[in-house]
Image (cartoon, rainbow, N blue to C red):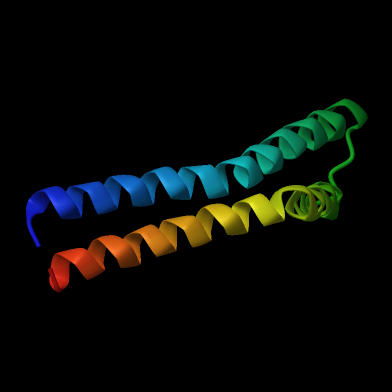
Length: 90
């Protein structure tokens, strides 16, 4: 296994990780910022006021794009098995 194969595998890994985790992190960030702004405006300092909407938003997003996320991960896994299969046993 040469450096080009490893570099390609790592590059694809980072791309897939950003594709899969990006939407969940982004929705968590947006909901957290909105709830923090709401807390600052109303002067409510309840920690669960931020946690519950974040969890609900992420669960809803998971229901919306969960199939796509699984498809991306399965496609990446199959491509890695194919690449390593041809590299290890040519």
